[in-house]
Length: 85
Image (cartoon, rainbow, N blue to C red; front, side, top):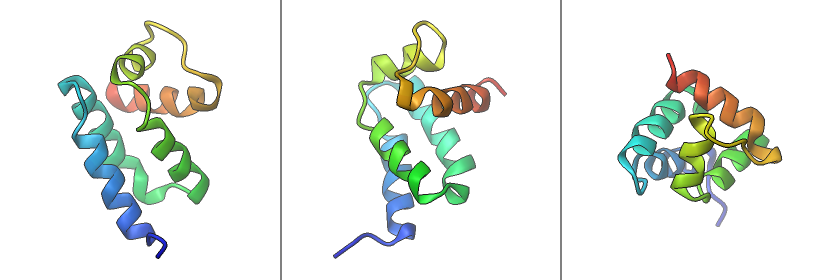
């Protein structure tokens, strides 16, 4: 049975909140709460893929320590903007 949009968003918010490092818990859960409800299906799929990435890589991308991978670059920029507010 396919996930409903509501269940998919709840699952991703939980995954965003339960990361391996506390900094990413805070950054990704803040972003998820602010943005997921308004995302398109494609954006949700990309965020779901992003959640599968290593926390150390994500942290380096969001903080600008290293460039984000191509497919994630725009979303990482948006996350960084949310995080820096």
